[in-house]
Image (cartoon, rainbow, N blue to C red; front, side, top):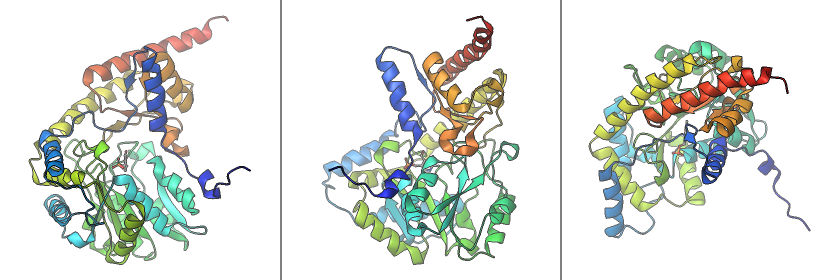
Length: 399
Ligand SMILES: Cc1ncc(COP(=O)(O)O)c(C=O)c1O
């Protein structure tokens, strides 16, 4: 007798970044030199004072469950931080501490998704959106993001995708995988238009909200009062404080949804690791200079990588406004994104991700994470340059 899985397991996608990371590690284990521009995490350590706070929490005996929604001082610190950064009043009672940013998207999508419902999501976008929407049984409606607008959405186009079956709209700025940022004027237009669609909830993924360049300001949907009773804010510590492995994130929920989110948390993970919560508290309450230093380093690398990408044959790259990704157009290289991803890993020893790992609209693009040192980025660009120059030559040679 064979095991019978639920049908929805076939609908669940994945995050190719982990697959490419595993392939890169396997090649490295065989002695091949690999430069990893594939993984989306800061290459910095968590600042020491944060690590110490986590250790102290363990030494102080914080070994048990905490409140399911997170320790109160942490939820208060989140509310204070949102006020400091965005000038918005948020009650700590609306803040839910969760094990990473992904948990908020899983909860929000499962809360609204079911067969017959439609959920609009960015494409190319973080792959888990589309994956979980399909898992929920809902119809995944892509919001195409285009290079011509710097990968920002067009508000009229998004509003045009809404039908009476639309339950949730997912937005992400600054964005993974494109580094695109949505200008305030587009957000204004979207929010105004949403007044005509009061049945649509919005999940705003602002996990890269503190990683912006050239003086750009973060536009948070939390600052729009007309959305407050249907906005789910996704944020967390992973990127801002280089804490991806701690598994710590938070969401802000409207009053009517909070109890549902908390019930999902109780069913799913009970509470977040207690010591990680104390570390997160130190991150918010302590000095922010490590964050500024890290963003300054990313800003410098961004210039280096964008300039180098634009010098590669067949490649062009728009300036990303935020996050730590570049999303060059590689359609003139004569290879599909996936072919180029594989050639770069296997022949040039550079791990990057095919744009299609982020949805069908990512064809013709690659995602480069520049969370790596400038010497490594420069070395990677030289390797890619050699591959792109040599390949056409080799192709012309008689077999
Ligand atoms: C846009 C976006 N949202 C959410 C996440 C998930 O973050 P976490 O590692 O905190 O779950 C990521 C991680 O790469 C991301 O790029």
